[in-house]
Image: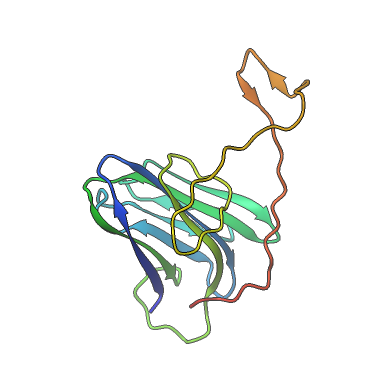
Length: 170
């Protein structure tokens, strides 16, 4: 199979963000989707070589962010349309379809899949058997020129390292 799926308990009207860290290998297109309990076409195709996104109409948003060394954080956001067990899926695409005969060796690297009740992706938070409530990010020094009160925003840089030694699950 060219996909991995997981279920979770969705609540109608709640906005969820699904994030996956990915790196191209023999394949370069990752598709991530809310497959059930969400509006039709709640998916996006991410080209890990060009950073192009082709998103379905059921999404609130989608994004791809370079994390360095060929790794990308791919995220989709959608709002649940019913309260029930929902399914999230990520697929491989061979350049033209998710339905194809595989060769047993071609894939992509993935790491750190994260689902959260949020309208934006947050930094990766490790979890195991149960949900985790993430603490808020805090600025730990006095702000200077990086704060512009007329724009109401703060510039913050953060380094993220992802090990290239993760194996392909496909």
